[in-house]
Length: 152
Image (cartoon, rainbow, N blue to C red):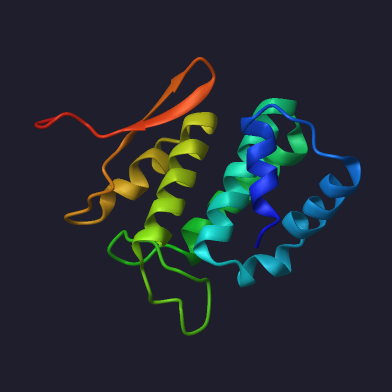
């Protein structure tokens, strides 16, 4: 879903989205029935985009959508051992790729840092033997991900 990329990128780069493009993105993001069709990467980028739009515009609309998306992620994209799943339904549901876990881990951390939701910050770390044990640090309004020091 290419719609999610400009949503996130415009907020990250502090650029305005043209009204026509914003309306098209909003139609996709706000269509709850379409969420079941999102791949993990799509969901991750849409969630990050909503968080960044909420952060940038202080919009209750996008803050509410971000909260709903994170709840949806937990209900439909989290496997029993803590790894993220590739899809909400269908044959790809039980797949869990590196890309799947990267996008949804990043989205969880960004959402958790923005919302203060400790569960969002802990959920990617639950997977046994996970290499996804990262910390998010905000510097000058921009996020960065760092690998924890050995022994921490």
